[in-house]
Length: 283
Image 1 (tube, rainbow, N blue to C red):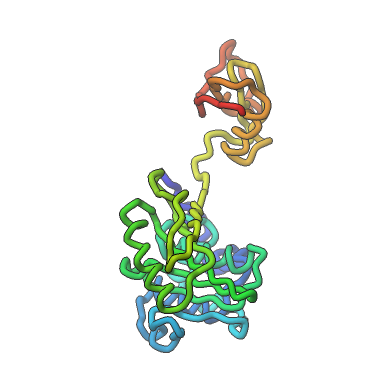
Image 2: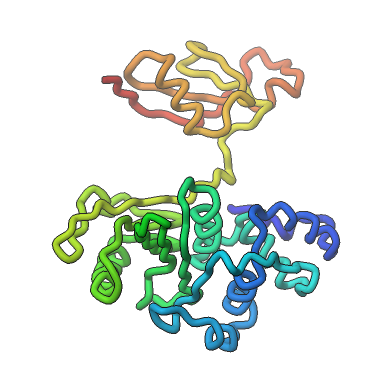
């Protein structure tokens, strides 16, 4: 079960939600917010008609001239709720929500000098390309976003990439961004676009909502071979990396003793819950 974080907020007043939304970093510009709201809230076509790009009418261009920050105080409660679920709690895992989070991440966090950005604000399946980045070095990056990426969607998107390349330019980088992905996506096979081979990239948004241990738990590896505190690790991947480096090769079992550091344990043999089991092979 996934937590609905907005529903768990005790104080849903506009003042409180606005305070939380101040943590959106970087702040949304007025034009970004206008496009986002037009699609996520009222499905209005007014914005789509007034904001056109050189690709086609489905894309909207953003540039450095659109740097006026949005005034969130003018938004209605349902609009604030949408922003909270996309950027703060990240409980909205839809394609549109993922697209806007990836847009924020890639435009501002990556060490790239972005010259222009174009975004497809719709979720039409026949238009899988969602983001177009052009760097100051004239490198073109295209991003295709999915809530769940399966092989059928992956294969169906390839002709659209070729179509874009024929219209504009062969991209230098192709990214498939998704909330979840099946393992059979052939991401190790280069795509051939107009006789140019490009290795696709798969970026899966990872949010450990149900972390298998917390800061109060004692982590036990292989029946007391290793004992560590849960608060030393940010998540299961971080823990597995430590276990891989410190344990011997072969079958590994990891258990947790719940709330070891916050409760008095009177039991002679405390209950242990297995949180991971597998085989680690060292080179």
